Image 1 (spheres, helix red, strand yellow):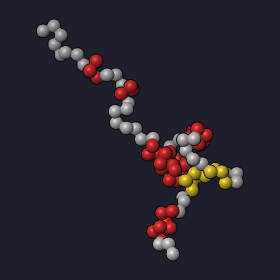
Image 2 (cartoon, rainbow, N blue to C red):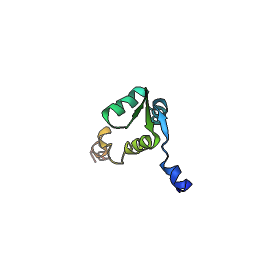
Image 3 (spheres, helix red, strand yellow):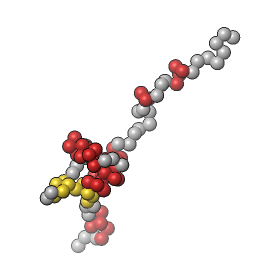
Image 4 (cartoon, one colour):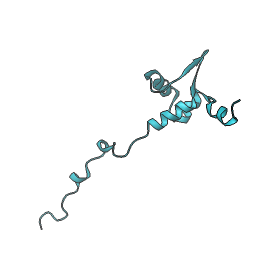
Length: 88
């Protein structure tokens, strides 16, 4: 006999492509691109695609930007900060 806790944790929560796209904040077309590129798993059930909520949540966590990785997006601060008194 399995405990209710164990059954609850192993239950798969399925999402439609519309629900998954909305959760990710992207268009369905972008969602299909993630699936086609292999970044996000999807399952074809008959004529529809379904995604596991746990896979969508894991995808969100993997997309998290780590501090210090965006330096290429802004000018180097040291180069723009010159001496305050140039001729003194």
